Image (tube, rainbow over all chains, first blue to last red; front, side):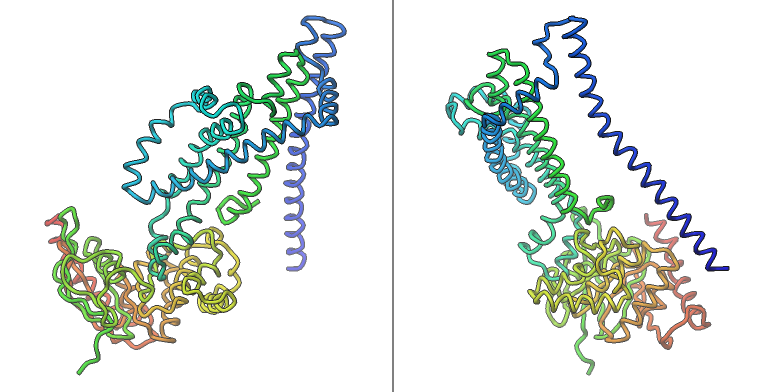
Length: 280
Length: 256
């Protein structure tokens, strides 16, 4: 009797799990379908206009196929890779500087009152100034070489990292520090083994936001002062009225940002798998 | 002559920056191997006193010495168990227990072995790889006790450790704590506001009063161990302490 009852339960459990898995699968497929639908509508609109309706000049909105063709050509000529590489180089360098400064200052300000009183007012004075406001100045000071763009990206991405680090350091549960001290921890051991890991969720999300920000602003910097990079590619194509290439630039930036965000989210989830709700 | 007490508290007064007097002229001697409870209503300074022994709170005047050494600040010789568990959420149960030995630079294999031993002592071997967020309140407090013990402290300080647990879990943990304690009879200072908990666990119960915090009476609990919560002797003692606690309540209310 009990065997039968237990078997019944396990069958029910499996059925429930299957139902859940199936509905998850349907929603996952729908997410891809929505992207496919976007491209389909784009194709239909441009095709209808170019061949039947003729409502606007076809040069203004290229078909998806045109963009793909330009993409293949730019890839094969090596231009696209060169521009991606140039933008990446600036983003990575500028962001690394900002991350080091943001984490360092965030920690110092959270821990040392003197530094907080002396440095925080200055940072708060600069925080509301959009990074773009400094771009022309930076070009004036550092020229149109790599330095101006790296400094620009560093400035723009410093604040998210700094703010998140300071917040993370301030939100540490003081009882954790007491626990570590009653286990014999010294100040530096507690910093390394308690404060840094406790603040890490906040710091990581600051880093992710900062990196996203870096890709946001690199385009603007390359509009103004660059001879390579994805922003340059878009702006340069404008002078030639090469609309497919402009769209290609935007598309590639979006794709890179999307991939990086997925990568960073995965990394974050791995590092923070101890958090409630982080699993799965 | 008596041997030197494990913990000596001499004429200790604590006045907070706000001007509030938390403790006034408290003296207490705690012998090695004693399980002692600090019992009293909220505001009687029992947690303040424990935190002064731990070194988290500075005394205003008086002396506190553990093993003959004046307490200057927190240290690994005084293990602490907190009401809010205070486990490191990014470490597994096993890694939490290994934290003290890790700070002492014990080799990894050895400290994990130590941690596994203490985790086994609190019955959580099968949960070694879990994070605190995956454990129930009772399990978290077991891990916290194992963590304090794995650091081999000279005395164990417990600040209302079972206060956040449901009644059933609380009694289970009291039983488990006693069976662990009876193995090596470490000196334990246990803060609680539950009379029953204090009588069940302790060799001595220090009843404290409020406004300002002071020691009212010290009860020697000579009920034989293992104890039961329903024997006549137990219940009578519980009533006596309860009655005494109630006596002060109107005075405290009038003063407040």
